[in-house]
Length: 213
Length: 213
Image 1 (cartoon, chains in turn purple, red):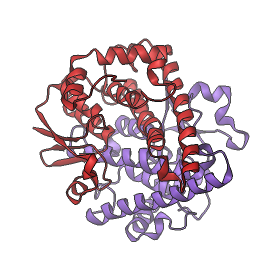
Image 2 (tube, chains in turn blue, green):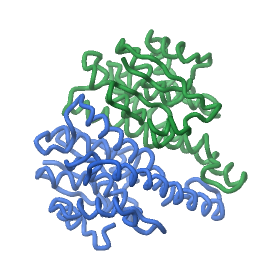
Image 3 (cartoon, helix red, strand yellow):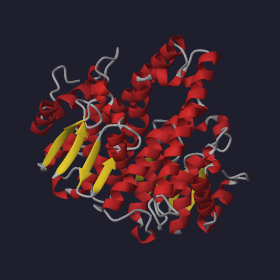
Image 4 (cartoon, one colour):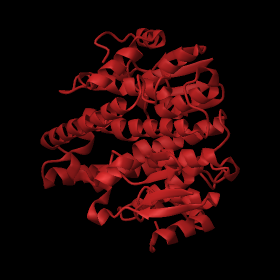
């Protein structure tokens, strides 16, 4: 029995989609961000970085959303959520997951919290605008990769953990001026991933209402 | 025969250290950043994100430094650079690599290139100062993890790919007001990793002069 510490639509969404794909036995534990519970002493014991999510797997307490995705994929090889160890496809899987987490996700955090990098509102506004522009270029790069590939997923015909991660991040762009869904290949990709029963169950269990992305 | 596209001390350094640990057959290919070669059409064919490094492994062209580290560790299991697939230790290995790349490395990029997030110098200076402060808190978190662990490495007694990654990022902090080496556990960690023959060979082949971190 896994426990996934979550807040609706936060970085738990991709791991949650994978738990549903796997058909794993798990329970959700709400971390109430409206009361800043992710910075409480009890939560910092689980994740000293004070961020959501955390996955508890028996004695293992694991944070970092992308690490949780990798761990779940490895623990449940029958679900086919990661390519075989040592294969070229696995290398590309790593590449995309790294790009998504260290580039797209990192820039989205700058976009959502520009005040963390500025003393006053005018500078924060500059930071936010630059981040939005940079996220656009990143989404264009992913759009081009989808156009160059055989689709419908990032690595081709098979749904992988990186696809759940990409949907989660694209959802976060839904209120940008030029959101992910406005790009034709990304739009089709999002429709395809959203059509999966496991995706819909994860969204429903987190209480996420439309528009989804 | 691998090819590693590099520029001295860039994000190629950790993969380079691993190639030396493995004893792999490889050659270095310089990407001349002083001439902006990482944005040339030829290089963008290898990595559309225009960043260093790229690893070429026969038909595989791979970018993202952390992905290259994972791939090398997987392809050469005898080198013991990653824990066994599906183990709790592997999960912690993923966790640290994700934290290093999506949090520490991402913030270091903000610190080194604050103008990418600002219209004018005053705002860029705010961004740089905030990034430096945030990097300090991240290094403190790693220092606390080293203090809580059994050492000398991030995951304990065995040297892993994440340790090369951590040394690379710590090197990048060497000119900060409170660099990584100023923390006692991190300082000892850096000395230990730098004492490895493979580390010294990688530094020498990139032509990196002291101070190393």
